[in-house]
Image (tube, rainbow, N blue to C red; front, side, top):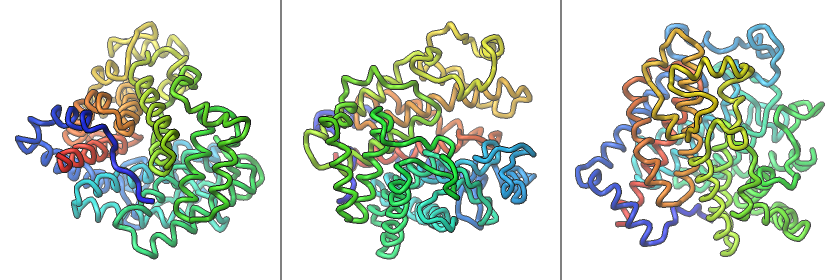
Length: 452
């Protein structure tokens, strides 16, 4: 079935549209379209490879070219800067499926709302790169970390992030009006192979040769809400594009086990048991969006709508320095509390602060992307920009009018900041996240303006 567009009540939709009214009247929604397209161009020009049609985790079209990435010979040995890092962290090719997949998903949403030809061309471009990811490994169903711009080098220890986002992105393109019959056949085959391999391996992600569990390759069969979201969303997506009843039967079987315990874990009232958010928790919002767009049973759909709302609201409202809600590893790594305190001080923050993601974003300074002080640069980029993008992404995908209205000004500001200062930014998630958020906001505003 076709993915559902943003579903708001008539009253909520008009209320949300009213918050954009002055901008729409002045042509500002068109300006957002132009800004987001310029940002996409800058992203591809700076981080994209013409050889693979993929964007990378570092700016590869700068003075050093692709030398900013780990070299193919080191990749083949599972090394990063001479050290054994089989999952490629720090290589610049570690999140190819994740970053390109979320980019493609957002492009499809934005194109369907705007019918803008540039967005169509860009979606086709990135999809062609994702087809390369799908066919790179000789092991059917394995989603590698890579490839390097040489089109063939990749790390053979993958992860949850790569596999699930690969599924979500291809599912989304399958339902785009851009997909040809051949594209849909390729997607159905690729997703079927991923699911077949996962099933054979007990719903764990294994390294390419199957010798051990991959990094973040845990079993999806756990009775934990995070595992449930992954398992159900992937099964729903695979059945939806393959029409293979086996996957639908598993979807229902796993959903009904232990008196429907998995669905009970996705009740909005159970959000208090949610594990701490991370810099990559936005991928779960994408999975929930897929599950919500595929599921047809009214009670489940209503339940998912409520869960998505409270999930996003929790991310927006929680104190980021409270480890019950947000993990410190993502921005502080192995720093001691003393190191963290010193690094936070220039931003007017401390571990004793009470700060939401919006508070953190107010401390962000785009000029600091070029700072010589790497610790300040890390706090500025990972904590003050990166962490807010997670919650903002969740809010935009929540379909909740109030939450969308709340984050929209910050998302616009992120797009503007990257347009004006993105030339200072050479690596990491920030450019990717700014583009994705801009595309999703553009999709929402364009759809609501059209509905009006």
